[in-house]
Length: 133
Image: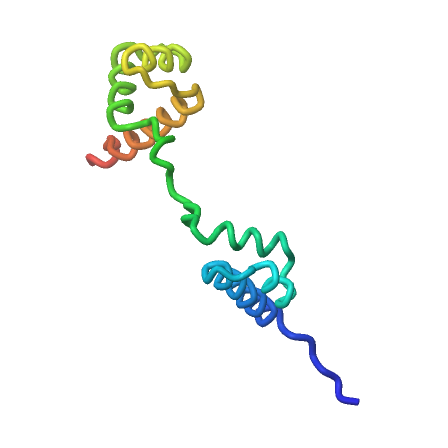
């Protein structure tokens, strides 16, 4: 009796993708996609999800969402300006001033991260007295 090896995970995944593609093609051609799903042994809910996703744009992956970027160059420069004006302001006071001056609503944590970035940038750009020797 010959022993058969089970199919690899990649081949099973490929077959499932082909079966879903056949269901979507049947839907696009106006045929009954439920029958095609049953004939190809594709779960109804999986087939329905594949059919509903045919016209949808793929979801964005990674990167920054433009609507959530609040720390623009203008906000950063205003923050540096406020620090130069009075370096003893608390994070809450800085946040409130940004809101009143620019109308930008940011969190205290965002102000803190922005100030850490400014501090690191200033430290990198500042020359050490030891470098002058």
